[in-house]
Image 1: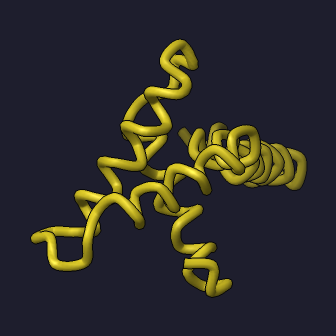
Image 2 (image 1 turned 180 degrees about the horizontal axis):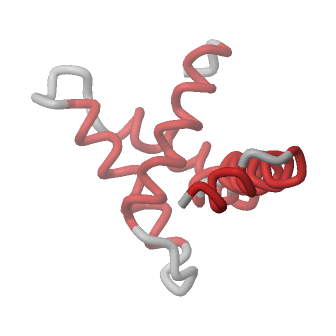
Length: 107
């Protein structure tokens, strides 16, 4: 046991361990979520879906945010039925697009 500890306590072993750790951290942070790639690829269509939902669902509807999100997602998935994108990923992309549009004052 003392031999293992003394080997792991060398500069080379510590450098190797830290290098592996840094590589793993870089891999985790470099991964792009699926909704982000959907937003980049289908941005104008997502914006159109959000605007259509804003017009179709009135403000006095109960749970209007959820109703608009569902409407926008169904509108998008109807336009791209064979895209292979999950409903949850589309909803996440729509949420990001809606937040951006709202912050820019486009809604």
